[in-house]
Length: 364
Ligand code: PMP
Image (cartoon, rainbow, N blue to C red; front, top):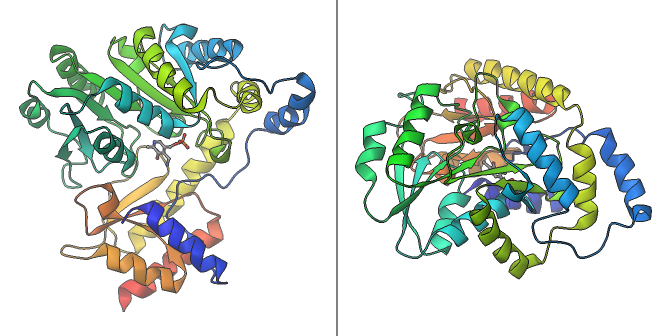
């Protein structure tokens, strides 16, 4: 069971008139930048609305490249950019085009479920590194090294992490990049929570490693989940491969939405970061009061909390749905049956109400 199963079930219950506090999905509860409203209104008359290049509008890919160079210490140009309908599709394209059946991918768990699902869909074998709360969610370098064989082709990174909020210490990240270089592995780095980094974070782009692929999105940082737009950064040869599959599947990303995202790209979103930080701080404080065990997140939008040892959190999540609160069960992120992921991105009052319902159920 994953957060999506619970989300769909919660929606069904809402359809039947039940009130649900959504603490299971990672969706900003604030609005996109004001420029989005303006550009949505003007895009019709601007004439954007035709078929276009599979890689994206040239002015958009250029702006994205400049944006990355300014914000992520990269040295890329528009040939390194592929505009995609959300980071999820970017992850799908990377895994589907760069890996072949029989290849192996290393995934550090707990992890967003789509990495594993995309690998399985492509006939790729998943090797998981299980990290623990006790070890501060840090993967062990020897363990990664020990897992690499001649079939290993890629390692997936996602920092700030969904669900733990972890950001790797610089040295550990350097070591992982070094291992990837030595073993000629792709690094797929999903950096969609980079805007919500509350301690030092460094993009994989800053290493200038030729086999790195970075996925980014407007979903979380710009609160544009439903617009379905993001981008992939990689070496031009890799981008061209991914663009071919994208052309095959969808021709190109909606031109009006590209235009809108282009206008949003340089908007001041610093207030979003402040809001997310204060919501996380509130969640951390309240979750501590409940006696949940977790590592204080360095970023992203969640806490990943252990309820207690030998506990079936999936059953707990279903029981809580009846009480009117939706949580993401730990098992969706790997072998974490006694954990739940709680999102901080909710209205303050509802977040507090949700947590008190969790407490009530725990006390029973
Ligand atoms: N990567 C991670 C780690 C996510 O948590 C999510 C969304 N929950 C995505 C990618 C998908 O983002 P998008 O909306 O851009 O497809």
